[in-house]
Length: 518
Image 1 (cartoon, rainbow, N blue to C red):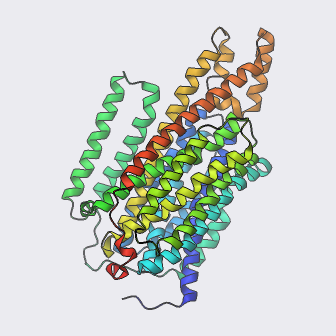
Image 2: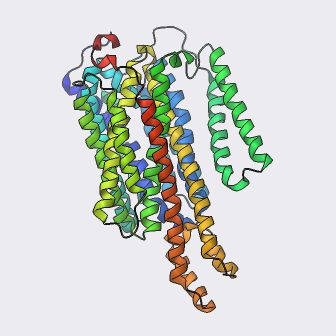
């Protein structure tokens, strides 16, 4: 039984976890705002989705592994190691000289981020076993996460314009250096595993990593190989085989990475699906909104960051309101489905934006989406923690984070495919009758829309050939906007599916019977 802690020690320990959350939150948002400028300088639009996908892939794998290790050995050592690794990887991202180097550094950063998420979220349940007490303290975590994410777009835009895009990665360094001593001093080292057997299934962890890699590569190749390619279907079959081997091995393993017993609970199955689909929608909105505003509407990174900020501010507001409502409502599980209705409306609004839309209406659309996500994200974790045994809280929390990351990874790849296909299709119509290979090459990628040097080059070529450069550029912008709108419309369909699933969630009984968690 853990010794009672003073309020001061609890606040200090939560402050350390909040600093860790700040690292994750800032990284998720400042990078998105700066990425169009990164692509313009490093000239690698083909790797645009990979900057996110590489991070998300390693992140998702490490969340599951760290969640299990944290249950077995305590979470504090992994939080400390993750802070060091994440901070080091952030410095490497800032020093990247090519898009490939940046992608590799982001993959390393994802390992650190996955360890942080896999251990830090579950640390709150160690500090506060009572679910009602945990909800109140979770508001502190949600507020910090929300404030950091809210600062991210504006901070990323300002840093990119005034200090260069590399500074958006270096901003993690002082936060990491501050978080390390606070966590070392105040976060307790608590182990909830009573058995002497603390083995972990490393073969299963390897199969999990292989499965994520296979899913990512197969998704990425859909656009380049085409549906008629036998190589594509061979990759699909190989991905299915790896995933089947992982599931089969977990059912036979003595110490599985993801215990199959978790899925015996209907609530866990539903919450995992919701986590996956919510991650997909959220990441498409956060990742492609800056590209829409900068590449599609021609706004500066700073202006785009300010317009996206309401999305992240409202996540904080929604999380705080959610924390107040959960202990008071007779059916708090309904908050997820109510929030999804709001998300459908907000996403539909974003899918109709154009360069003539007033900025206040753009900001309102992002704010509506953020408010909805503020009701969903904390509830997914709280409800899964209340649905499993005490010894499985860490791996169950990690499972929700992992499925959300998997959804984000597939969302980034699928949205990138949809945007690219729609862009190429409509640009092909714009270029009908244009026989200049140089102009075709320039308009082959949306990179043109965020790279002033290539726009000047287009103007010179068009003048020489008697073509309308402004018309070609406007056609490319409309093509990019159309592609991103298509991705947003797909998010509406996904959100509708989430709503139908959320309506069937079982009662969140832990909110009314806190003794059940002990």
